[in-house]
Length: 123
Ligand code: FES
Image (cartoon, rainbow, N blue to C red; front, side):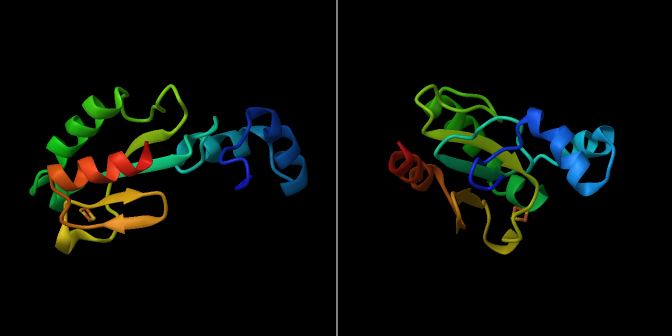
């Protein structure tokens, strides 16, 4: 599944059979946890923390900036498939927020200029 980046709904009966669970159980897990996607993500995922510590130092503005710059909403992927934009609620980097994760890399104290630079790299 990691190679695909998502859990195709067609795989749910197969997973249920392999795990000796009901299809409803597997479907429940896949739809409850947002880290399980049901469609392929963009080549890079940008996650902006919206939890309290990051909110208090400007995360909301970063989210709006990213949405405007990429032309997508939260949970959406740019039409060229390059970037998926997501919000998260704590990346464990609270002391140096606002925190943004780009792919596997975590950035702290991200301001508008730094976010622009990070989004430029993903394009
Ligand atoms: S509140 Fe943003 S990293 Fe924890």
